[in-house]
Length: 394
Ligand SMILES: *Cc1c(COP(=O)(O)O)cnc(C)c1O
Image (cartoon, rainbow, N blue to C red):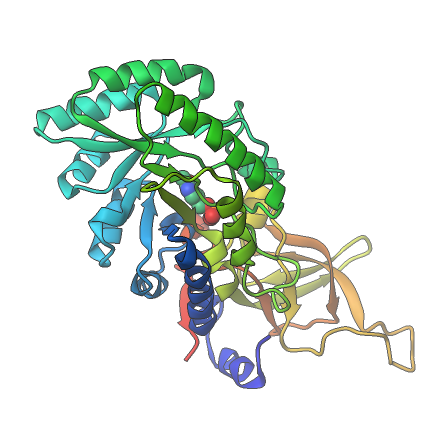
């Protein structure tokens, strides 16, 4: 994946840092656009996945909308040139301050997650003599078949309005004079790779839009969220998601009426493969039970493995990949299993256990792949660590 020039460049740099391949990012965005445009599908970028400002500007330049989950994300999206008419604001706990700021910006839509929130947005809009556009985020109770830590569309999850509460939503919408009902919104989880999950979602969306229409509420927007997964195991073989198959499922199984808009909110699928976390081996600890590679990057730079047991491909860029042992003295192995860990004072600060790697040494460059989504954005200053740097492809 990394050519010798790139590795030579890495060798000159202080670690750790995120390395962004902006060419791959552009190719990915173009592939997504090419797959969505023929169907007239609207794609919003879920900016919480990565708001590195260079990355964000590239995404903006492709004309995507922005899916925001905080008031500051709304502000940042508009500052970076995203069209206000394509900014949506989701989130299970929007504060009054955030709602007021978004009302002032005249964003496209609030994705509302409870009856109580509907009433609050209505009150705040009324105080400003404004009308807020809202979509109802519904919890469809569809299993995303992904890791339970990143499942959001089951009744046990905190997100969205459960279907048994929908009559109360309709009643509230009838009373809230400062709200304009736009449509219905769903987001059932992340890192979804099974297209049948989306097929099941379509079935539920069809039933629910019918339910609203029958109650005199025309659904203008069907927002089916994001969650499309990437290949963490084979980043080089599958650097770009199969956007065509993904959008095709919705074209095929969603009951799309004339003049209805279909919206998507993709995060991970647009950015994950475009970055790797590059670090160096600080120390090698060979023990009886375990061998440890202690890196100069840890959970403060990339917390996904520690936060939700996420898998990342790990490579030693300074040694040849470990193939068959060609060493005449077979007592010297050419690959070892290491627990690849960070320097942070927490036992969970481990990228992965029992990773097969070539025999590694202090100073070797280690790449943690597919780190472009929920990576740099979740970096923290725990242990008073330096802020992780970013490096970009030429
Ligand atoms: C996080 C999030 C997304 C994006 O999820 P990905 O798995 O990164 O595609 C979309 N919509 C909402 C409401 C979200 O919270």
